[in-house]
Structures are given as structure tokens and as C-alpha cells.
Length: 434
Ligand code: URA
Ligand code: CA
Image (cartoon, protein in one colour):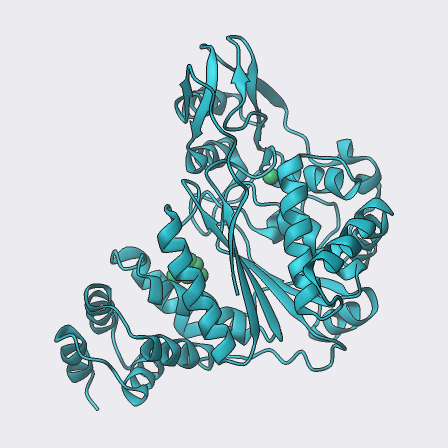
């Protein structure tokens, strides 16, 4: 088989077969197919799309391109959650302990943040001593005993996707639904869970800016998951404004502790309860969603979820003092309020720009190798639909470098539009695809 012929066939709008797709994935992973031929194929796919079968074969080949994690030593139905990425998305820190408290094993493989979206590992490292460098044995033991453990991404999980995603990123071929669906699902499937809950974010802070493309992506991913024999549900959730208030590592940990203490922002709490309920349902620890939700709320109310969070943090070396006294988490030297200069209802918030502001304060990585400032970030206190008076505090900036405050202040001020007329609040959960 020649790569030239595979590219030519796709360029002509024809459908590739299983052998051709496997030939490409294997060759690209081991380096016999060069970047320029892979780029040409990605562009041909971008213009001519892929059929459901092609998308399935691509996912399957990428899933098998490296390690596939074996979670069979963990008792029970393993459910994984994946968020397509958003701003201030603190859910994993809360949903993990919530479902673990319901008896569902959570074997979480997490990443670090890049660009304006944060990573769960960075956030957890705000807690002194916490680390994800544990052996596989320890990981499996912790999941069996505590029901919750977090480990870093294995170096060899879906390497084909790692290479291809980096290539797509620089060749303007990311935003094709089949390519995104196969990229996400190949990693999730290789990570070994029996069932998968997808949180597909929609809006200005998300990959998918509009509802219809988010639904298409959700449907493709659910279909792939099911075809692979894993029960899969997708929840479409709002990302037209940051979730909760906190955007930034230590700030988000503080916010998660607030929610686990049965306080904290309403939207974050509501979403976490909903996502956890679907996971409990997928794990067959409840017969209906309502039953699952009642159990989840009970875990929050009784403090069982907070207790689970502490057990998990302690097992991975974290200092629990900071959980009981969150003011001991990393704190920024400088704080500044972002103040409204107009009256009116908030009409829109460019969520991605709030993420960019947090990044510019030091909360994120500009490149893969930059270090992050765990204390930096933004507390975005206002939501779409809120009535604002001139002089109200809209947001609070946290930074260790005073010179960064001005730019972030301007970015946030410009990210918000106002209206004289009443504006509806945003709906948090937009649809569920099963
Ligand atoms: N996230 C991924 O992992 N892959 C994509 O293609 C897009 C978002
Ligand atoms: Ca948040």
C-alpha cells in the first residue's frame, strides 16, 4: 500500500477502508509516514469529511496505537468522565469524591493545563505534598480501597493521537467533528473504563461555539463509545461564561472545597450533582437518574464526599490542613478588583477571554514548558443576566506579579457586554445525548 494512494482516494471524496486507515495510523505512529503526507490526508478529511465507519476505524486504530490500560483488577463498573474543556471547569475535583462516596470506583487519568484551559493535576498540586507520581500498583490499590485516585497521563496512551493532534493544531485541521470525536474517544477508550460520561461544553469558552455542532460531536462520540461496547452518555453544558467563580489553580481548589462543604457557587454545584448522578447511573449503583441524584445529594449533605476527598488527598501525600483551612493554600501577593463603569444587565461574557486573563496573570502555561503560578487567577463574581451598577465589583484579580494586573483588568472589562433591558440567565444543562 502507498500513502500517496490513500491521500488521493480521500482527496477524490471516496471512503477509506479499515486496512487503509490502519496503514496510515501505524505508519504515522512509527514514523514511516512523514508529517507532510499526514497533513495532506488531514486536509482532505477536513474538506471531504469521514463516514461513521471511517471515524470508527480511525478511533479503533488510534486506541490500539499504544498502551491500553487494564483496569480489571478494580472491582465494579469503572466510569470515566471527560470534559471537552472549558474555563474554570472545577468539576473533576468535586465529581470524583462525590461518586467515589457513592461506591463508584474512579480511576482517573488526568492532564495538565495548556493554553486557557486548566488541568486537574496542576490544580491538585496547589495542595502541599500532593503528587500523582504513584506506581500502577499503588494507583489500583487506592482505587480499590478509597474508590478514587488520580494519576498522570501514561506516556504511551494513544500515541497516534498525540502526534496527530499536534499536527492538526498547526495545519488548521482541528475543527472537524469526526477528527475531534476520534481523538477524544481513542484516549478515553485506551484508558480502560467500562462506561464513559462526556461533558461536552458549548459556548464562547469551548471548542464547540454553537449548539448544533456540539450535538453532532456528542452524537458521534456516543455512537463510537457504544460501538466499542462501552456505555456512553454525553451531557451538553454551558460554557458561555466561566463555571463557578474561580478560574485558576489554587482558587479552584478552594472553590471545590467550598462545594464539598455544601456551599459554593450554585451553577458549579448543580452541574457537579448532575454529572455525578449520570456516573452513578452508568455504574449501575442506581436504577433511575432521580434515585442516583438523591444518593449524590445525600453524599454532599452528609459530608461523606468531603471525607472521601480528604482520604484521597492524604493517600497521595497531600497535607490535609489546607483542606480544613483553605486560606493556607497558595495565595497571591497582589489582588485588584475589576469595577463596572456602566449600569445595566450583563448580556454576554466572553468566557475564553476570562481564561486568557487568568493565563496572563500566570495561572496557565503559554507553552508546554512554562511554569505556572498556582496562586494566580480570576474570581469572576458576576454572571450573564446580573444587574450591575456602576462601581460594582465584577471580578477580582490575583497575581504575584503586580505589572500583570492592568492588562488583565482591561481584558476582563472588554470581555463583558451590557444591556439596558433585562437579560435571561443562561441555561446550564442544554441537552443529554444517550
Ligand atoms: N481535544 C482532543 O483531545 N482532541 C481534539 O481533536 C480536540 C479536542
Ligand atoms: Ca470554577
